[in-house]
Picture 1 (cartoon, rainbow, N blue to C red):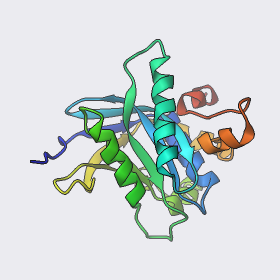
Picture 2: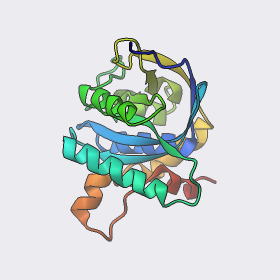
Picture 3: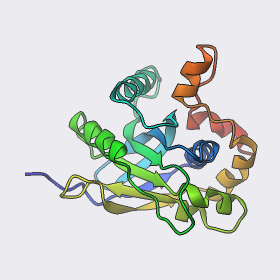
Picture 4: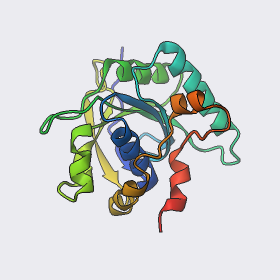
Length: 207
């Protein structure tokens, strides 16, 4: 019998929020996808890093290759505790009032993560259409992010409580770096010497 994911709270670090907003704002007319990194337990998930994967609908090859690269990067860290805890996505530009959605591709990715992990991954969806309003101070950053856990139907429709850690710090940094997020497909297209941005690299931007 399928089991429902434990009811958990989710915290999101400011550098992760900055990367998510920057990735989505940089590619408002295309869907974006990426991996979430952190620590997970039965009662909470701490998202402390993220890797942007693409600004397109990812193929199976891209998903498998990117997750393998992310895991290899984590395995190479001296701190062995962080792990892949979920996936994030944003659709192409949504209209005002339209809520964030879980795409079929993202649902398949988190289902695949669960099949290879003992933990229940989370799915984070961004409302791309309201990010500009957040940057202009017209909306609370909390309204842009929705986090979902697995339900009995295996559809990740259970909305989880989430907390943005120091969102003001993240929002202030986005204006300077919104167009400076290089996802994995950008990195591959630009060559080996180019950057593949991770949220951890945003820490130095915060003052």
